[in-house]
Amino acid sequence: MSTCDRFENDGLVRFVAGEPLDAHIEACSDCRTARANYEALASALGKAREAYETPGAWEAQVWARIARQEGVRRRPWAVFAGVGSAVAALAVLFISSAGGPPTLELATVEVERGSGAVVRGAASRSGEVKSAAPGDVLHLVAKVPRGKVGDLRVYRGADELVFQCATSSACIRTRDTLETRVKLDRAGTYRSVAFAADKTLPEATGNLDADTAAGIRAGSASDSPPIDVL
Image (cartoon, rainbow, N blue to C red; front, side, top):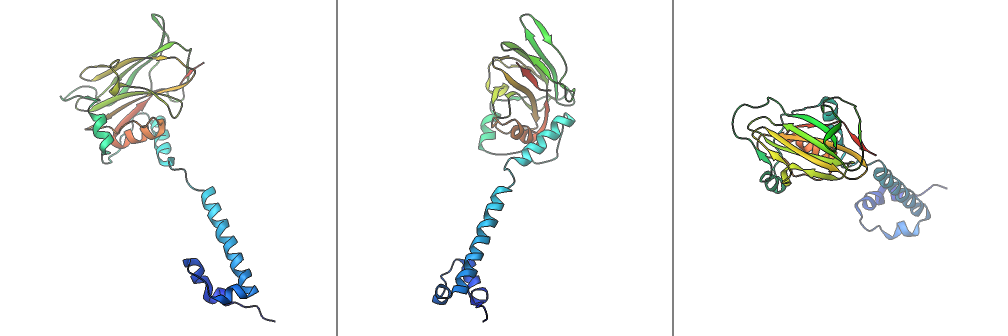
């Protein structure tokens, strides 16, 4: 006895398109079995796609890691534009004359306790991990090329922005320098990132990788080794 293949020949296209099937499909056991098999396959493919879907932030994370390995990184991409960027640009430093340092540099990264620094070092030593205690103060100085918009940010972990020079009165701004001291009041791993762009910087999202990647696209970024507050 032959098996009915009417569902594969006539009904499958309508099934995929979401159209109603004819009465034969409901009455024929072979066609009902074929339809059930295709429904199971479609469900399995949908679950597999969800399980292996690429994370939405994968590109930002890749560019941020490249920036950490290579230090200052510049890319000839268009400057990020948007409503949030325009608002943030009003608060960041704009340096308008020629001269100054040729490239962005996070020149000073010092952890101070009391009147003296207990941990010192430049930000360019890849892989170096500094340590501090709750209550210590992080002293930062960023050198920004003249004619660039600059910002200096401190993150705790991957998703917490604890300080931003563009929005803080504690940030000292000169023609080519951003300087601040940030109290490290909680345990965690801290990273400092300096940014520079020709016109505007993207608004901070609070995510370290996403903000670093956006800063690179807008101009350049320079970050410090991690500081573990224990």
